[in-house]
Image (cartoon, rainbow, N blue to C red; front, side):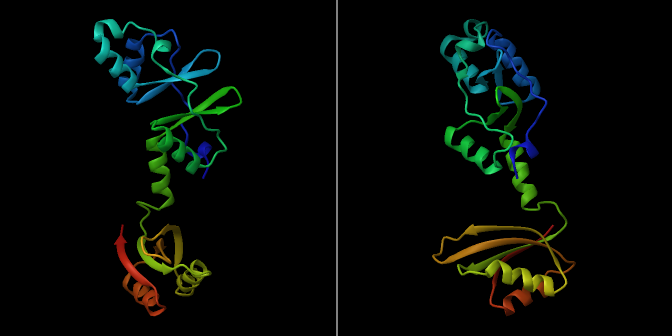
Amino acid sequence: MIVRNVMTEDVTTVSPDDTLQRAYEIINTKRYDCLPVMADRLVGIIQLTDIYEACMKEGRQAALPRKVKEVMVPNPVTVEPTDLLETAAKKMFQHDVPLLPVVEGDQLVGVINEHDIFKAFADLLGVDSGTIRLTLVVPDRRGQLARIGEIIRDAGMTIRNLATFRSSILDQYQIIVRVETSASRPLVELLEQHGYKVLHVQED
């Protein structure tokens, strides 16, 4: 999945010459954590924490009339619409920011925030999809995913979502698979007959 699929295109911004009071009012009304700062191009972001910090240091009466450009984070970290979602998540984590501007050339075309990423990953994992979720322990050997897929297919069931995670145990990993079926027990028994350990079953 790429950033374009989940980003918000209707972007609210402030200018460098807007006051912190105005930025705060927009952030509070929209329930954002930060806003892009635009002149003729993207020049920064202003975070709610930046405004709070200014108010703590100087007092509200002195801080809120100040201009955004005095407090904003210049040259913000950005992503492009064609970047992978994982790239955006990694940048947010590395730079400890709740929102990334999405740029195409010199143009701001959207933003992506933590909520967008959490929702996208929930969709990838099939949360609230009306399926059965199985967590399997699988040996780290070639062809395991294909074999599990064959077992489920031959049982007349359909895989809707699948994700893999490295296990804390050496030479193993875990697979989360969401399957369309009305009953989980026959599938669990079938997988265990083929040597796969089912750690957890959840029926949404």
